[in-house]
Length: 341
Image 1 (cartoon, rainbow, N blue to C red):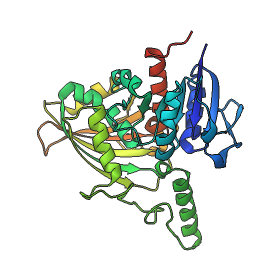
Image 2: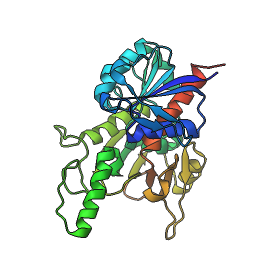
Image 3: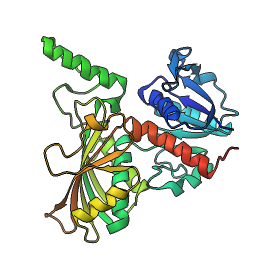
Image 4: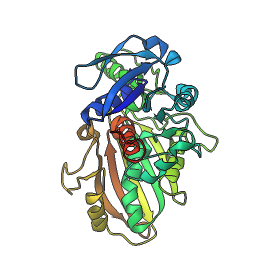
């Protein structure tokens, strides 16, 4: 006996990826239903590579009664309006938007990092999925924090355009084509030209000069990992289609060598260590696309601080940064609370 699962926002990049991963990981589903906005009602999406086509149902009229889990990837507005309705109808919501992440009654989960926090889901019937850049970061930080205690993190991100959805990917493609043929380039989704450029601006600006993306990384990391960790982030959009990269500088409470950190990371869940000190002995977004692991490379000691390390962290933002993490949460929920059969 399996679960009844609704995928809300099924026509988007992450929604399609959620369905692909449900099929790929053979999540025990008796039924999967595609749910989307009114404009997508009736359109068809494929359930992974199974060949099975699902016709999208209208979120405005959808009844979640009898469904066990709803994977939401429809944005903050629909999450605010429909997640509580689904939860009230007995369906546990796993939401990929930022709307519920900092609610004290909603657990924010990365299964490799804080699985025990999922036990609080019953307060609202909602579980939050973290920001894509946060998810891969905390997977890398957790085993090192356990070993030596992290005091401070400084991270610079290099985030792909797929983090801005299909419109971001289309804009990079169209601008690249326009530049090659000599056509004018007009930014629409992004504030400046993204093709052959980098933009140090993701989401809106805050009063202190940081962007909301940077704020999200800080507060979410503290909630998931440890509120005592000090952190500063600079988030940059780069002309890469899929895969976020991060240069991470870490200051520890206790001494830890690069070799010790490599040994720890090599055995840590969800991590692939690829760290050869030679040409090509590291991972880039091209290699991580389509994979669920968080890749770590370039681990080295930082001589500018006591007990400091620097590393390079790469992951597919549509998978571990969103869809895969959501499905892993669903698996964890099933193991601990919604056992079937």
